[in-house]
Image (cartoon, rainbow, N blue to C red; front, side, top):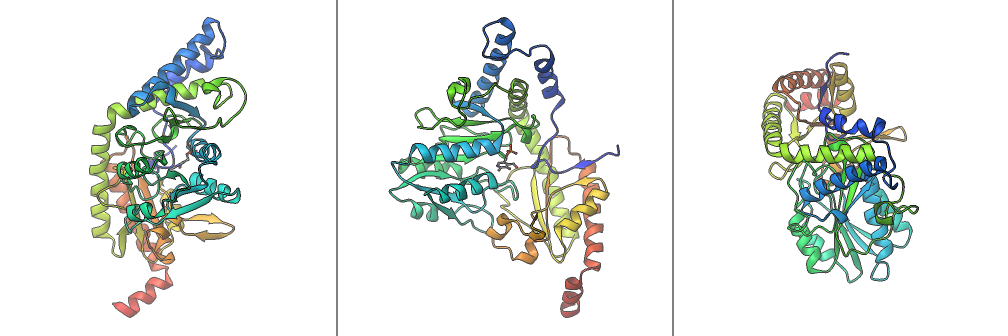
Length: 393
Ligand code: PLP
């Protein structure tokens, strides 16, 4: 296979070889069910405890506050639905933002159909939640604030500490979807007043289909999956031991390499951002320039369709992502790009590139050249661009 330049690490990451290595014996050798009493099962039980301990240590949490799930989507669903149910007597109001992942937004829509009221906060042009609006939205019936730690499209990091403080002052639970942030930024759940936090293995060079939900001790939360006694009866079902072991290892590696890795990603990302803005006219960067994940850049190229750009980049062996989602035959621009105030026609021309631990300067240089070439070709075919140039140049 030809070498691929993989710049879609926000979508998923390559499972690190060290992670695969520690997982393999749990398929073939240590396959015992963790709920059994014999030695083979104890191996699995010990491995699960070790992974739990590693993750709790990284977050400054206690081991019995970490619940393994099948990934970010499940963790988000659990946090929202179970809190809503458990705190229903206190109130029926939830606050979130307009730029959340669909795992949150669609869960909120479901809750709205079931008698809950949801306030969707606006964000500013960088994608930062408006704290004044948050304070004003709080009602006596507010039971939960769920705001993402960092946005998956534009990389903006939200003011999580301030949000946590506001929630705490008002006695409201605070959940954060940290699927993009865990492993990329240091997180201390106590310092940030986080009551629940969702994370996912495949975003940090771990396996797919495994994640966790941190639930602070004392939070009244219902069991999400009913059955056996696994995960303290709150999330029943025989544990995905290889996945849990892999997630634990991935978390350990991500924490150990965080400083060096993100410094390298930031440098390459800033280099790419500067060159693209300088060398390709009618281009903008979406998201915050200061409060942003180190590996994320999101561009809008005026007069082109992001989808066409993606397909042509793929032909050059470059994987990226666009903010548009093809739903019912029409291209809907991303809800995140619309929420930061971009008009539809500009939001359509978006390209998200997310770097990883393996990204090299050569990858970035090749990508910049390819993007330049393709954007020029697409603009040459664009009647909008032709029109604009006739009128303005
Ligand atoms: N939340 C955010 C912010 C994400 O970026 C994603 C995945 O893209 C999810 C939730 C869903 O996670 P998973 O793919 O593990 O279900």
